[in-house]
Amino acid sequence: MINGEKHTNGGSAVARRPPRRRGFTDALVRTMRPEARSFRLWDTRVPGLVLRVWPSGKKSFYAAYYCRGQRRWYFIGRYPVVGVADARKMAGEVLVKVAMGQDPAADRNAHRGATLGEVHRRYIDEHASKHNKSWQQGKFLVEKYVLPRLGKIPVKDVTRADVRTTIGGLKSILANQVLAALSAIFTWGAKQDLVTVNPCKGIDRNPTRSRSRIVSDSEVPMFWSTFSGSSVAHRVLKVIWLTGQRPGEVSSMRWEHIRDGWWEMPGQKTQVWVGTKNKQDHRVWLPRAARAIIDGQRQANVTPIKGHVFADAGDRPVENLDAVMRAVC
Image (tube, rainbow, N blue to C red; front, side, top):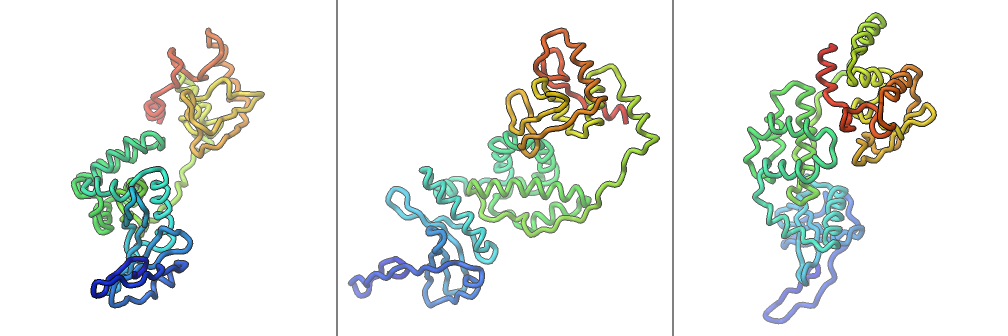
């Protein structure tokens, strides 16, 4: 048995030999010499992680596991495209799925022919629309700049050169945004065992400059005067200006979150609250001018004070802030 596998010689079984085991390091894998026959080396830190070395010198990582009494070999990736740290992480994710009763190798085979367009749709439906607040922007960027060129290509065949060509003609900031949106799809696809390599990795982002434009002292009265419209949206814009908080959070402000001059924002999203971007609780002191605007909302409210501070008749957070802000500008 070589590396835990039984071989025969002239009809009689050769004595079993224990599999080779070593603690993987990049130096070890890089200097591992090929032999006349391919062999496997098992990692001591992640028991299911296996390196296979071929006579040609090619080296590949696999995750080994048992399903219904049979050993499965889940291909992780070739070295050095996939390093030791990433191989351990991916093997661990595979073994967690096995512990949950899944068969990752079989699942991958079922989706082996999926195109980038199909994987993108799954990413939006199963993940982005549920967990990413800005998913619509990423969806737009991918549909406009990526899918017309790469949408019908099997996702496993998309290369780094394909990605470079796709974003090559775009302006610096736009290219960075498209690359980030596409990379998120491949990162999710790797977790779902649809791809083994993210071709967006290793592509340098374009350098960007921080925006230096600020509103001058002479411009402040102009904006403040324009914000003094009669609509609820204008009052929301004033509170955004005074607190420096995100528009989505201000427009979703709730009465029960205002206590003794403080605005206390729970980090987690609920059916009636958008949650904070980093999912951490946040506490903001409301300046006197902001409290005056909020008190005005309280006085104008003919129903019991509950729900959203800035709401329409159906207690839905005020909308169309973008349109109002464009008109202001």
